[in-house]
Length: 170
Image (cartoon, rainbow, N blue to C red; front, side, top):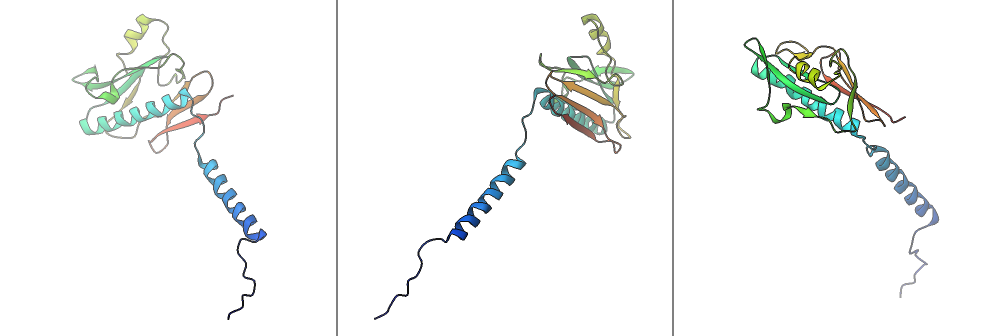
């Protein structure tokens, strides 16, 4: 006959507290790494930066300069061929875009000219003010996009990369 010496079946209080502590740490780490709420300006800035990267790639691959021109609520990409700027409409990512009503380019005078009327828009959109050469880094620029709640900035870095900076809602 064997005699049992009172083996424990269950967890001690210290084991339960340690388990809850570890679960809390893991939960906190997961919540900490979740992305914050993106506003319309942040989303549009990300899309615009991605399209600028496509324009840079297109310039290098085609060997032609590619430029972007725009106004407060729209922009279009052009390629320089035989002495003329030609609208790019054969590459989906580089087709002319109109921003949603809530979003607009708020600054970037060195990149986009401010447009005062629909007539001005037609004239200016044919002349890119931001041009990517097939050789060399992109020019220095900074363009702000706002949606009335938050703001984002798309710019070129010192290394020639396109960067997006998000500014919190105020």
